[in-house]
Image (cartoon, rainbow, N blue to C red):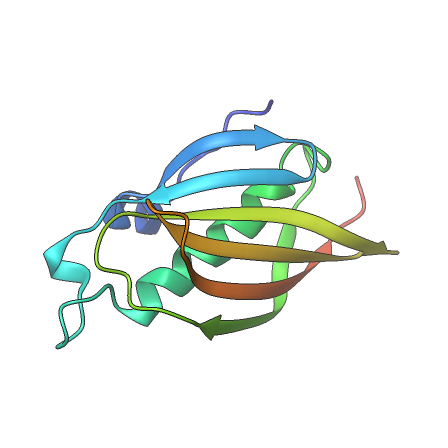
Amino acid sequence: MEKKVQVEFERLLGIQVLKLEDGRALLKLPFRRRFTNPHGSLHGGAIAALADTAAANALLVRYAGRSFLTVKFIIRFLKQALGDIFADARIIRVRKNIVTLQVKVFNREKAEVAAAAAEFFVREKR
């Protein structure tokens, strides 16, 4: 497992990497009132950031030493997030330099909060 280098934005949100495997990552976003919307649930932007970050982390083991960027990201919000949430990202398809991932975001009770699909462009090794 490669050690994830956390960027400042991830530290600001408090995102924690719980598990990294080849093609899979499990991350946690602790609930913080300052990241809520007017309804008291986690803001959709914070949930989307967790899902995108989980997808990027799922690439770390398989593509160690290479850079990659999000080229497509689609998220469907299913339920309010009123506490800590988790994102489980998995690679589902690889086509040349484009990797497609599925991300499930869920709460402590395992109820799905959001579902996302992401595509990343993976650069060739130099």
